[in-house]
Length: 334
Image (cartoon, rainbow, N blue to C red; front, side):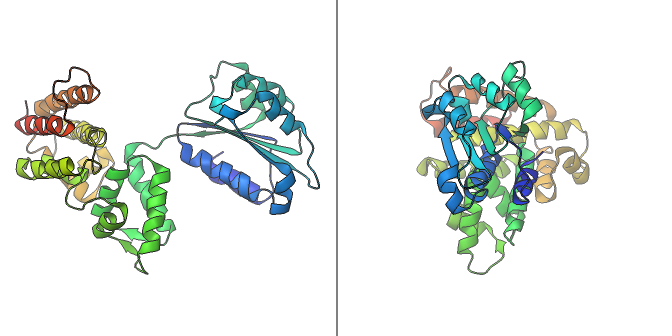
């Protein structure tokens, strides 16, 4: 069962006694728990029949006691356990989940990881609860997710603006939604998000960003690349090394696949990498200036630079100098 089905069932008045929400993507878990907290009970009933616990600040016994209470002046009560992964002795929930109260809707938000499937609690959850596993989106899925969110607001976005936006935000779906909502409120009736909007409302320069750095590297334009890095140096929050390195590693990993295809056909490369349009053309351009062996060496350079950024075998203390050294070596392909 996915998050839309759970919420749809709730809207129709279909409830199970226990919902176990787990996984690495907090966005969907937060959406489900927020709906449960704000929408299942009306305001008058919530005052008596809504209990919210946080794992770090709660004892498992008081959570179970709350679940075993009967609702007041209502057919049901809602008990929500947030940040359940921090609850001490969480295994003790097994006894309640085995025999839950039908008038209680117990929602457990267990973020960051899944239960150990070998444990008794996990087995009981699988048998007795509605189990929802929230998976992180793959990087190549994020642009389509963003487009879907934008279309849901009645808007559209230019292809370049989308990639600048996604490269800057990364895989943080909640932040992405927040930024989309902010832009929606500031478009003054316009329906298409442009690169200028990304620059003004999200705070990403349309000329000096990780996407433009990647583009400069793809065409071996060292002057443009160093100009962008100088901007990053003067604006440290624009693109920290922790954002730049994963983006470049992802680009060259895909370029490695593209080079292995042995073709420069844009559609073939685009289909293999799950990309299209001018992004696919960027990869076609890049495999004309970087050979297969070059790309292998560059991936090693990127892995080594990542270790140095973490303080391992690092002689240079300045992140921007480290990046400049990396970019020069990439473009010289050694």
